[in-house]
Amino acid sequence: MSELQPLMALLEQAERERDEAQRRRQQAQAQAHAAQEQSEQLLAYRRDYEQRWGARFSAEGQMELVHCYQGFVGRLTQAVDHQARVARQAATQAERALQTLQEQELRVASVRKLIERRMLEMRQRGQRIEQRQNDEIASRAAWNRLAAATTRF
Image (cartoon, rainbow, N blue to C red):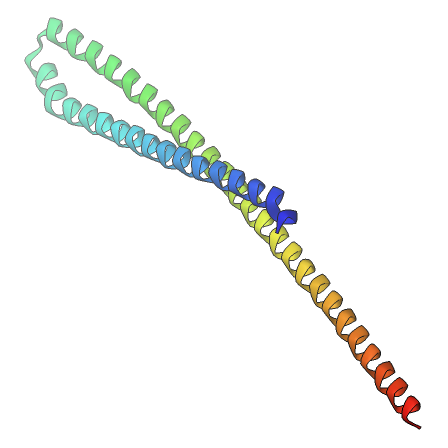
């Protein structure tokens, strides 16, 4: 089993790294979801604001209010655009985190497969040694029986 200790340590490290990648992926996914949700809320707010107040300010002809309205809608549009960029960046980070997680899962699976192969090799080696020992014991027993039979005659 001491042959497997380095591999077991490697597996433990790979599993820790995989677990950390899973945590980072979940965190990135949550951030991406929150950013997308905020982007959608801002967009809905802007649409609602434009529908509710745009026609009213234009109809009343109050130029000062129309300028304030247009300025606010402009800033709101900038906020919507900015939040859309933030949501895209968060989605990209979540995708990268998923790729990292998949790479870590592949590494863990590879180390496990290597451990399985080494254990199989060890079992086969042990079986060969045992077979050789059994063959040697049988051979000695046959020689002993043959020697005992020749000394009796």
